[in-house]
Image (cartoon, rainbow, N blue to C red; front, side, top):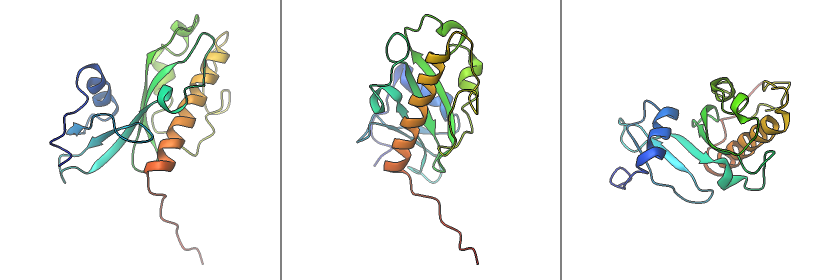
Amino acid sequence: TLAAQPGPGGQVESQLRRLFPAAASFSARLGNPPHFEAYAADPPNTVVGLAVWTTDLDPLERGYDGPIKILVGLDPRGLLTGVIVADHHEPYGYFSVDQPEFAAQFAGKSIRDEFRVGADVQAVSRATLTVTSASRAIRNSARRVASALLKPPARQDVR
């Protein structure tokens, strides 16, 4: 069974727990696109979320000084549960992507949102390239994993 598989362990598991606090367990990194699954306790092995590293799904997206490694959590409806900026080498990251407000603004966003700096993503002066790149990586990664692994929402018959 899925629950019998070893989870990711260590720092990754604690990051997944931050994205999915109600989850009972997590998978090791799976499949294509590479992702983690968060499972409910009841009913057992029900997937309640997916998480991806932006650097796995959008490796060519770069900030000012290289890739920005972000863990993106997504629920089965295509809403972001949150993001965690795990690693970057941005010269202005300490007042842009490192700030809790940067990550917090993505919780609850839909994969259908724009993710555009100055529109639905808060701009940070002198760090526009960093914030734009990180936002684009979050959007592209979330949309790619949703397209590959989530069921589209049921269409409502409008008459």
